Image (cartoon, rainbow, N blue to C red; front, side, top):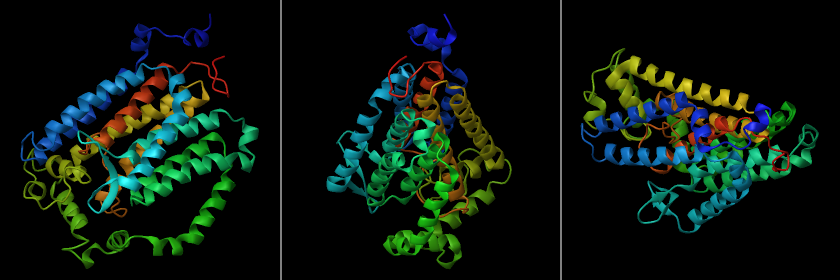
Length: 379
């Protein structure tokens, strides 16, 4: 029996042997760094952030392993229902969502506050992977065949923009665009879309919320309002510069410990790392992210079925965008858009979403030789 057919039905023991343990170690290492930084940001205390993050991380790791050992054909079969559920929850957010920090992005279940837009990042990748898995290259060449996936992207993007959550909407758009390109959509079609987007930019500007306009203006000149809209990024740059090469030491960061640095446990956690452990610590974490992303793309390239290949590529691209946008944001390279640093920033839904994505990557690696037809049936 060939290797391809022999892996169509793996035992639990076989799946454990096929697990990419190097990727697991990377995930645990990055998550541990996040807990250590939250412990420091909380004044060298487990409360209010580190203890909660640790419990979420442990629960997320257990969920990640369960997903990793689940046949990827299960996710192929449930991709559309999961997408539909997340779309429904985004509608629920608009109708009766919990409001926090001026935005309506959450559903409060009492024991847990859920942010559906985070989970939509996973659901959309799976749904697009399922759709393109069912098309041939000739089908992808027909514009009419792209109407459905474009609608699948625009529906959640539109709902997320209403919350408003520009950062997450951009991540959904960019990750989806990468999947379209990987699926074989011709480059000239992207040029048409970009031209249309450029033409409507002036109109889009007038529909932005005032705080979103201020973020863009602050990005161009943060010193214009140093105690107002420019305060966050100016304090971030001060902390980044003061860390030097080796940093001020664990728990010794003046900007974070003296409460000058805003949102130090969420959006600006990377700055806490850079201030306390310097450029050395920042580069070390970025190296870990690079290895994790490299593992993800390697899994995509070695998958022998289209669904697994596209899903792995979409998930890894989304993870890369998380890292890139957050680091670029806190260093002043792009406007502040409120994207967490993956597996490090404090947060419930974001942490679980990222670990679910990692579990799917591990599962795709385990089942990389499983054969799946265009219709989704097993050969």
